Image (tube, rainbow, N blue to C red; front, top):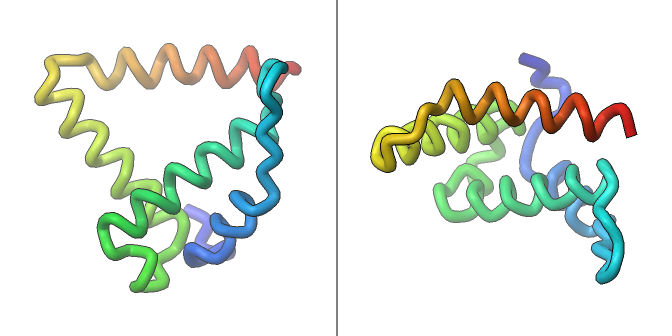
Length: 94
């Protein structure tokens, strides 16, 4: 894990730069900004924003919680990751 980019401040900067247009398909910059906004919200809700944790740690905690949610809803998390990877590949070819 790369801990060179640390803390919630980096995520907040991405959110501030977000320019979410109304009538077009989001590009990868939009998708990254939306993910950063979600991660900022999660970090605030869990107290990680105040602890100056690395972005890596915040992501790990969020993904772990999503795994717990998948268990609760009887969703195959590995399947979700597989489909997500396919979407990422398609979107990255842009």
